[in-house]
Image: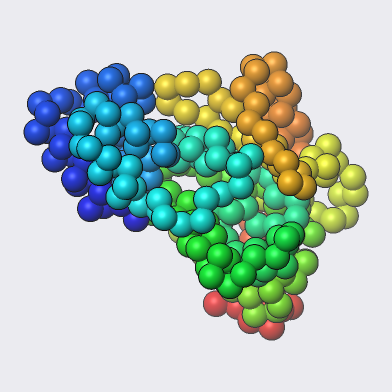
Length: 266
């Protein structure tokens, strides 16, 4: 993702005689986020890159060569959430309609953007959007951070987005991530009936050096919420539904079974 970028950032920081802590303070960022960028585990947001460029006087290079800078930008309402996602130490997702973005395979992401976007995207624009989505998923390259939990409505697994082969591969990918102990997945069974999260998707994020936030998205809209009482309410609702979801062992068994129903499992 950004190993070369991160190495160059470290070189510029050291040439300026600054520690990660000093650069973080000057650029109004966290030291941890600086460390992740230098290690190639995170991509700085446009604003982060601008501040780093300003502090290190790199004449726009940190902005121009930011990984993914020339790809299709995400929709405006997701920009703030994307920047936060790259900095989070804990992410807990609830998926109502689609597999969470950071857990999507390339083929599944392409199908989502092909069938779920309106107005439709052209092939070239869609390819750039898929690449941007896959860039987000690279935060999983770190074997430990961020800690990711996915609470997935069973309807997400049953809806054949992209067709049987795409779904089998997507579900198999989720199973492998769980088996590798990289993420946790809990399925909310259809038999549960109604539940408090069935009105929208939800992403909860925690950080090492700032208060937690919640991101809620619906059709053509989305918002980041940081008001403590509201965030706590979102967290409590998530916990309530998580308590009614299948344990991880049963969730894995169900995902394997559904993948086989699609005719393939790897």
